[in-house]
Length: 305
Image (tube, rainbow, N blue to C red):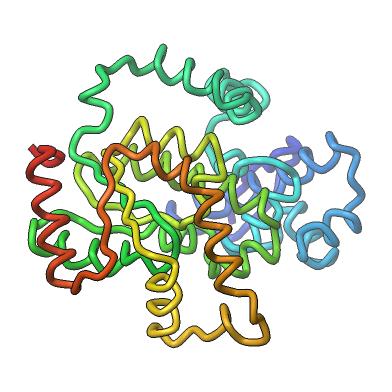
C-alpha cells in the first residue's frame, strides 16, 4: 500500500503501483481538481456544465473527485465549455500561480492587433524570415488546392498539409461535427490555433486552407504574415463542376440559384483573396498544365529558396 495526496490536501491510501501508474493517477487527480475549480470560479452548476459540454453529470462527478479516466475528446468539450485551453487542465504548472499560463490566457483574450504586437516583442524576426519556406494555397472549394498541393509537394519533396485535417486531428472529430458542436465561432478559434501550430512546427511545407479562412481577420493575417500565399483561381463554372466531379451534388440539389450564389460568394471574397502574395489562374487548364504552372511560380518567386 502507498499514500498519495490529492489536490485538496487529503491523504489517500492506494495499492502499491508502478511509478508510471502513479504519474497517471496524479494527472487524473490534477485534471479533476482543475475542472472543479474552473467550474466553481465561473459559478456553473455541474448540471449546467453537463448540458454545455455533453458530458453526463455522473461522469463529471467522477472526474472532479479523481475517479474518472477521461478521454481527450471529452476533456476538450469540457475545456471549450469552461472557456479554457485543454493544456490548462493537464499541465504540471499551477494555473493559479503560473505567470506563463496567466500571460497565455491574457494573450488568448486579446484582439488580433495586440496578439501580433506580443508575438513581435517575444519573437522578433525579419519579414523574409517569418515566412521561411512555408507556402499556403488559398481559394474557393473546387479551385484545386488539395489536388495541386498533393502533387506539387510530392514532386518538390516537401510536406503537404490540409488545415482542416490538422483541426480534425487536434479536436478528435470531423470538421462538420466541430461546427455543429461549437458553431462557427468555435471553429474559427480552432482554425486560428491550428495555423499557429503549423507555423510553430513547420518551416517548410505546402498548406491548403478552407476557402472561408479569409473571413477570419486574425487567422488570415497570420497566414499572410507567416506564409507565401498563392490564390488558386478558377471560373465559377469550373468551381462547381469540380465539386460535382468529387461526387458532391449538394451545391445543386434543390437549389436552382446555386450558380448565382457561387458567383456572389466569389465576388464578395475576391478583394480578400487578392491580398495573397501571388495568384494562379487554373481556368481552362488541364491538371498537368496547372501543376507545371504552380511549380514554375514557386521557383520564380523563390518561395522554397
